[in-house]
Image 1 (cartoon, rainbow, N blue to C red):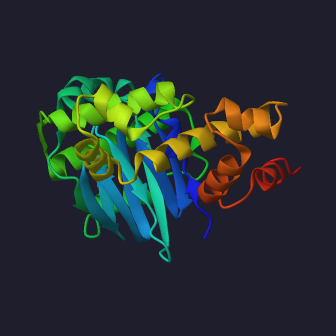
Image 2 (cartoon, rainbow, N blue to C red; image 1 turned 120 degrees about the horizontal axis):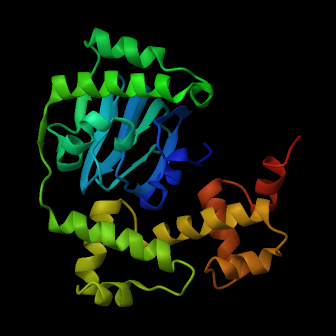
Length: 272
């Protein structure tokens, strides 16, 4: 089964400039830990997917919605041998101005909502256009208001929890995004944030669902994938540029991330 870094990677804290909702369908999704000011909704049309939201793990099954409130740290993955088809919707708060102030300070009262018996919501979800990007902003805004309105009515809202560890993980993600090209080690990272190595390692894995080495590898491979298609750099230069110490480590990490070698990735993404 090919591992796919979903479009969700695009919507990190650095990408909060988007002004309208974005939506897509996907099979066997995988999304590394990220956060943003937007609301993110994941609806499972078939199968199930494993999600981690602010350090809590969830199994989201067919007919259920995962509700990621503003600035929650979240990730999801398809377990080996499992299958799923999901709809993912990203709703910037600026695109729903009448709800923006409320949703900036409040979160959904539930993380998982069972929509199997919710006829109105099921109807809306089934109407989401496949070619979403071809629709005008007003159409996107209409879907956003309708879906958010129903969810607020069904699930309710609560004050955003004051969670020191969630704030820490957001700071960690920002730090890694800004420094992934440099040599990084768990011991120095833990010291930077004022923790012992063992305590920090445990917090990292509990909240992000992977080790720091695995997370860094994905950050570096994602940038490498961009350079493979958009630059004329040699393979060695790309590996060094994104933070790998040698070609061998780069090849191994890239294949683990994309289920293909860098050369195969180029061929796969440059077909006419």
